[in-house]
Image (tube, rainbow, N blue to C red; front, side, top):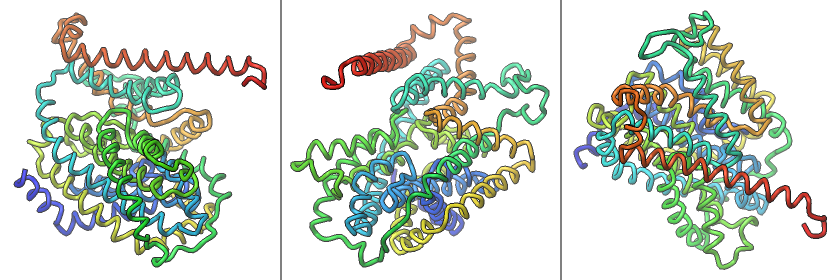
Length: 505
């Protein structure tokens, strides 16, 4: 372990990797600060910048963009009551009331500290459990991988909140889009409709930029017009009192533990971690009325939880090759674009990449504190710019980035198409995140299923009879049944409330 840590820091401390780590944190925070955008949109927009870098440097930069975007989203939550990321929605509950009380600086400082502590706990978990999970993954066969990927997709659709039916529909749509292109086993062209540009499949970058870049920008234009910053935030106003620090230590510890555990589970991610950490603080608090009215623990707990979850989300992505969130799907796609197959062999075949990335997490989290506390005034001024001047620049950056990949106008057309699709999905209550998960995992899911069926000579019962494969498939079935039963109960309860007289309801 000590030799691996030394290797990681030797890799991360090169001048090139330090520079791109800093750049990733800065750009991630900058885009995360913009209303309606977050780490997912930031990675989608800036992914083309990493195609010309070494794989290790590219991943270090993408990692910096990821947790920089997570932190940037909390700034808009506190100052504008507009969550930059889904997980930052919890921060609005007490962060914005603190801002209205003239304590926005303290809330932002606590956010920075909670992000660092939560991220540190997540990194330690990644270092401790990542290699062990990779060793377990070496014993997996094609059938086991198929069952595990299926479990991840079902969990993402059913556990992540919202409508189960809508989540499953998005997963299936992603699976269908993933079949476009050349069949890996037979070499036949599928669903290309005679277009040469589709023979290699739909561009992941074009899809991600459309769904999470263009769609989010367009949908947030109206919301951004209605919110303005009414106070100044100075460095002096950011200094918390001793009472503030004492009130944040326990929530940070609890939030980091919850986030570190949930981040590694498929379908859980930063959103559930933040909400569960906040609910835990309300449950353990003696005075529950403080929450929602500017409780500093209500800021520290969810921020530490979502940053711990952001780090531990790399555990299944890097060691097994199964992303637990849409953001990790894009990170997985970036690895594959660079010719690196994520999975159990990543640590042994590419130790420089794995341990260099982990070491860069420590450096990037320090950059977050060093960079964002002095530059909070800059982020405030960015938020004061009229959004009508910001979003055309963002969309232009998206189109230039996509076009620069293959100098293909077709890819820009894909951005427009998926941007329109993403906007329609947002307005109709569908989450694009399960779609991108299905798209990335779909080809791998199909390949492992076909290999498993070949090994089983076409007999599916041989797959189910295997203890590990059967257990994973049973868990997927249980999640589906549990989600459907829960949905039916909610529907029955809603109809009963509608049928009851208004006085009884």
